[in-house]
Length: 141
Image (cartoon, rainbow, N blue to C red):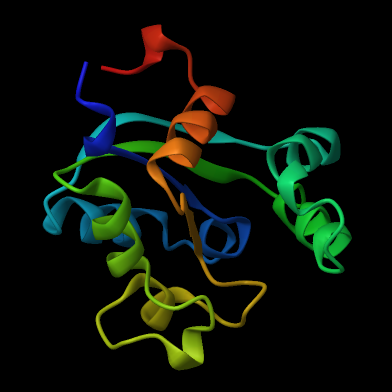
């Protein structure tokens, strides 16, 4: 198994899957030097989305976020690369696609703050928690 600092978690969100951008996003991830350790297409229930985003439960955007994330299938991924959390966040770009740098996933595939194509862990600790929410150790290859 890779060192924890080399793993991060990502989601290709329902808006990007619905738009048919999954393959193009995966190609960007591969081109950026990430190794896919686990990946699956899922359709979260509202309860699963609420569990995953529980840290945001008191935030005003929580109901909209969890409804959106459970509205259609998404792709969850465990990604490996040196300094994975920072590298993935750099590839994703700013949360607001309008403010994201050219060449980032959110600039190319995101439509708004809420529908911004991808999610990524914000720390190594959260990456470990998020990976374990969706993947067993047997699924990490």
